[in-house]
Amino acid sequence: MKVRNAEIKDIPELIELLHQVLEIHAHDFPEIFKSGTTKYTEKDLEKIIVDPEKQIFVAADEDDKCVGYAFTVFEHHPETNNTYAEDVLYLDDLCVSYQCRGQHVGRLLFDRVREYAQEKNCRRITLNVWEHNDNARAFYDRMGMRPVKTMMEYPVSEK
Image 1 (tube, one colour):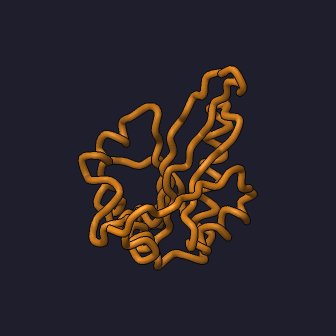
Image 2 (image 1 turned 60 degrees about the vertical axis):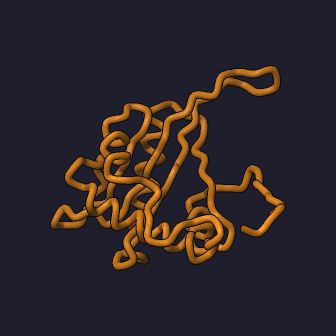
Image 3 (image 1 turned 90 degrees about the vertical axis):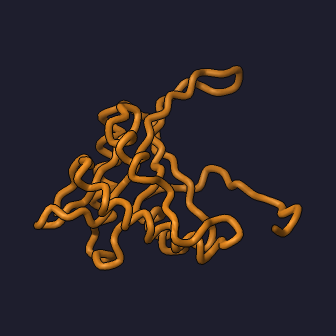
């Protein structure tokens, strides 16, 4: 297994993995997520792959098939009245194919994200994880991530 930068040729496999992630979210939050869709389209992925502020890492098997990904976004947070300036790497999405889970592919991807954050002189890596996604939460805990804040909501109406 190797981790490399995503290429245009990876888009069909990225779409399949994005679909796997979306279905997890659609199952847990059907009032938010549309089953049968993906977070990004093929056109979106084409733009992301060439965007210098974004980076997609893929885990590729011995046949160079994409079996996992990590989407990252470089963010510069300027100094404000009450916070210091900092560069942050936002981990937008991480997925390992159902067939490859338990084989440490996620760790390989996360290790590459850590290296990239160091290369970019980022102070920290941030991400969001959905409640009820216990597997993702446990994985990020094992990677050394820690909660910093919690987003909460109050449903005003049922749609």
